Image (cartoon, rainbow over all chains, first blue to last red; front, side, top):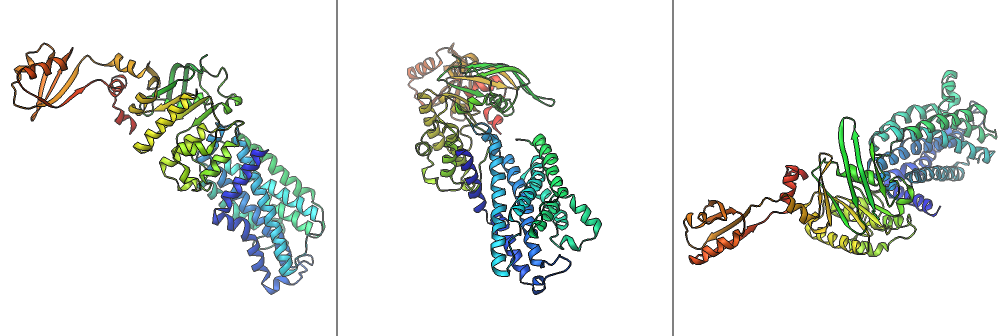
Length: 246
Length: 304
């Protein structure tokens, strides 16, 4: 346990020393919600959004953005680089299993998402009065389920990508459509029904839907939960089976 | 008790046979060298011993256990070729982190000092030179106080001074009773450090002996003397000697090849004629020659 903690600390150290990664993982979601909230019409309650304001809905969406950036790009790139540089191989010659390093990177990523989410609510709450979710526990469950589903996809990218650069590229290709379906460019409520249906089966949109519902006090809907656990099961198992250590 | 035993090890990658029927045993406390040209199968052999690869056939035991046995990881330190670390961790952080992996780690500060890394403790791994990375890599192989250290291309990328310092360190590690398995293509390194050497070529062990034994085994009886006579001499003065088989001239310099007590015979006849042999060199067979005879390649060719 002591060793695992040290590995997680090392992940934080390296991430904090990487200015680009630090910016996108920790600061970008907060900056984005701050900019969006500065648009006056985004602070008007909207009937289309069930009485919420655009800025309120975007609290969940930027958290989904943070999950996507870390889970689809940051984490797979780091893991593929660890393999590419022989760090996993070197670890295999020590008493610590390379699995521990994977676990440390996943733990770091999950903690970063949570910290980023807290910052989003803190800053948007103070500046624009974005309320805390009506059921904070349901919201936390939603965030964790979204992390699980998206990270499973990210792990499969890390398993298959031959290099850190390739992992980054694959992550980027998935990032835009998944983020579109999760409502980054327009909230799901304004999307056509058929697009909403498709979105329901993608990990990021399913996670965003759970967060959105938790904002208005709803407990997770069964479909989204099933979809996300399904991603964990299928993509997680595929990643575990296909992961190359060198 | 034998520390490492390799019996009939074979390993192929697709159609390429990397290692074919390799057998050797490493005894406690010795420095055992694996010498061979690039692509000869040296690294594959040690990676099988380190438990990183599974042999196609043959058996390996390390301290009486299977190489994949995880309990060996605390007792075997490994330095791999071309393995990097997290770019943005400092040398100090890496050393602290890796020493936390082991139940009874060595003092990392002392290790860093011995390897000349103490001034780089706060530098990021990514900012180190190739030689510094290499030295850190050696430190990590020794940080767990292992009973066996496997070092692949120990001094590649080090400057001559750092290379000599590293040899000192390796000797002192051996003096503490650690068994060392070195992979190298540096003749001087093998000659200086190794108690015994297995020469591997095309995946097979072509010779296994002490460095002196290898030289003796393969040396031709011919010796060569080169010198510049202080005054011109006729060829016949030397070719008349029974020890001399061949004489060639390179400008003022003379090269004499022969057998038996060649040096004595040549210098005697020169002395009798009042000639001094200036810049006298006697060429004897070296490990390099042995290597060439065993593998048909020079060590320079094989390292490129």
